[in-house]
Image 1 (cartoon, rainbow, N blue to C red):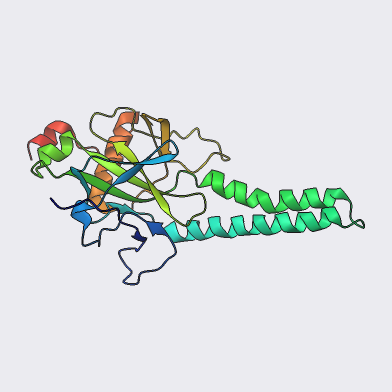
Image 2 (cartoon, rainbow, N blue to C red):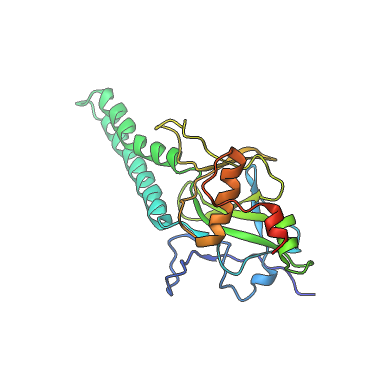
Length: 238
């Protein structure tokens, strides 16, 4: 029996041939041990391994165009906030400055970090389909038990974590409504899961026909028809 392996590599986009340490990810479609790599998903504050019969798709269905820029923005604003703490300490200790300067420095340097963290907390970097290795990879098996790994960025922007999203029979998976406030986080999908309501920010018109099918399901569950939904009866007859 081949042992299962926990992969820890670097995030590499499909248009890049260079490995970098910009973002650390456990999801590596180029891993030579992908078939046996452990797939972990976030449950609460813990990363839990999925059953060993699941593996990732050999390439992501979706890859966000701005992943590395969002990660860089998170790191820069957090670094600026840390420097702000030091600056505020200096203002507080110097007798020639009023304490209001220290307070202003803290607010001014931490506000960008808080805003970036809040707005990008649901940002999805990549989407992978999960395959059950014990079943034949037929269309029927994929549609009847369709699960996705939604990869998100950590708070520091230095690594990613996985969330599990069930597609099959999930009527709670819907398009986020237009009534969202300007001050709300970036969100395009929502769904109810074991950990409560989950949100995902996925950019439209990225990923081709495979993502169009998923967008069709999400839109259909909200009652929106943009011509992308494929009825189950039509899928079964293909």
